Image (cartoon, rainbow, N blue to C red; front, side, top):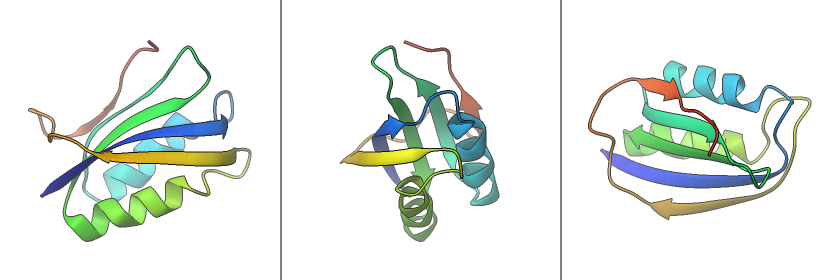
Length: 91
């Protein structure tokens, strides 16, 4: 199991990015969370099998149809304590 924390910038708020990412992560069997940040980015923690995490990270570089992803910053992270994928409040 690996975990990655992402910071996704561009036109990623108000375009359904969080709901889209929840669907992608759950379909891949990942645990973690996604949330908006006050600076206009979307932040996510993805944890699971390496190939599944890599697929979802690659999908985040494109995003849903209404999004315009400019950058995805990725760093290693600790896996979440709980299983499942959820949406957190904006910070």
